[in-house]
Image 1 (cartoon, one colour):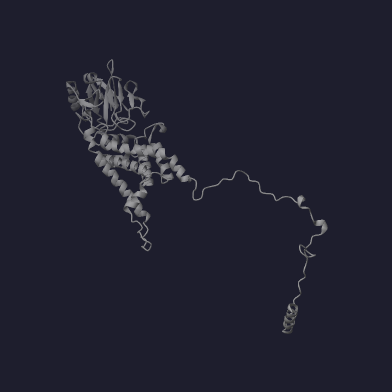
Image 2: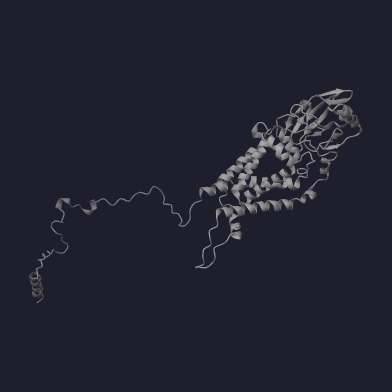
Length: 429
């Protein structure tokens, strides 16, 4: 019955116009069609077939944890520069605080180591001399305060990472300014310390802080608007980079001012009792620091002190001979005698502090007392018979034409020609 039904269905399909489908041949179990069966000579035994080759590993397989990546080159550079960042940051921070609070003479325009004395010394050899004379010297106290605040701001910015690149470029600018003024007379140039500081700040400005020990993100969270909580809360407008930079710069500047104001009262507490002696017997005038007139002498501490009766003839001689600076008796008694240069002589400018030294055996030598390193006024050490700079320790030998023997300069003091007549020492213009 089943066979007859299939035949009837096939006949009815053909009657409707369908085509006859070929019947599928059947093969035995496990057999292949004749065309698919391989020729007898093409068959190989299984034992002779080569085993599939696996690609040899070039080395041990290294597995990397998911979600983690190695340190970036920026973070490595920031870590490597961390010692430099700490050193220059702390040094500039300390330098600014020292000028404001610890050094009692820096802002005291009557002192021999004041900012005024240094600026007048820079005006001799610095390439910025016209600018120093026209702008800095008339506003010496303000210049000193701005320099101190700038150093404090640079130190805070580099150490905290707030306005880091601006602080680093500011440190580079200050270092360049110091190089063109304080270190300009240092030869060879590698004896000066300001160029290495400048290059260090440039390196930090280029490399950045690498988000290493910075307070910027915390500052942003405190003062900049945060994203409101909630799934459907509207997103705030993005904070512009200019606003963030303005915030960081404002906080940095305000922090420097607050720190300076807090540190300033330490000036009176930490001021040594001998600091007042630096300006005793002196009058603040147009000289290159706390100038004394003809009636003054160098004390053993290097500070100016009031003279004894031996100076009266020099003071009186000043009326008849404007180039008279002292008497031989006064210089022998004190060892060295300070005066004010009355006129331009060689590299000495009018108003510069001068010093005449007793060399023994009736010999004397006079020099411009402006240190050739940073412009401070040198003092006299009677035990060593040396002219010593109180700012950076430069020492000059008056017995060898004022040649430097120690310190950060190799430029000698300017020698002043003198003549001696009747016990009176006078300059020769």
